Length: 312
Image (cartoon, rainbow, N blue to C red; front, top):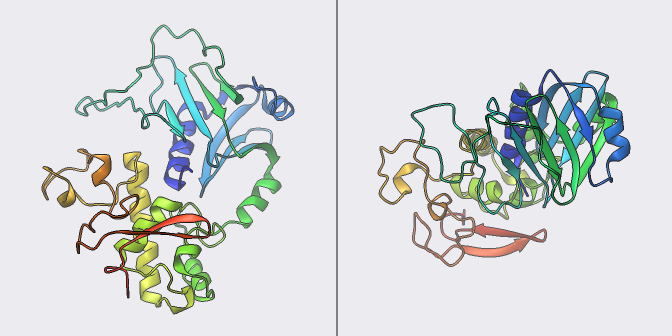
């Protein structure tokens, strides 16, 4: 499931490409036809994200609310003015494909450059739930768990059910997170996946945060000290902000990357098997202590951890 950084990247891209544009909204698949009719022909004014929820706001007081779930993904394209990822979501056969504005940045091999001969969006392929089309670009949504046209009060009700989002990191968010955790006997590994406690964390961030903070996944929230909870929140903010910047979840610093060395730039990203401390590394040696990384299940989700580094 795409984690919070991907949804914030989506919001940023929609804001860059579609904000202020009058959009043609359709449902090639047909499942969202009534909702598309409510949005069709209206100006999209803003795009916001909270946790794993995306809200595309329109001038007439309706939002397109999307939660990608396990299988949802957006695909994008457009004319020569289009810049951004061509795909954000899951599953993807390749990573997000970026077209860089910075001439000094080496483009990845799988970049699909926007065509200067743009003649509108291609014919829909597969089950496209909703298609958005502007003068310069298009976006197709497939496989989302939630895709609905809702009013602003309904959007506010969705937000009221969610915990604070580290990528918004508003005043009081850290204190709210600390207070909620302190009142729970639930293990930390469960709390971090509870979107009512903290919004946007998924399985990858959960495993990596607990390792980086050397926290036992089964420690009850109520037994976490205030200082440790504060460090956990701050590290979440930093790690997820890196994810927004990089378009990938990279939790290891450059000194852990083969051939990179301690002075490597963050513009030089690691190979996939170097990007994490414990996630999907069960049976391999811990990068810090050499103990084999363990794998178990908690709440029907896989949990990766180091029994030595995280025993306290």
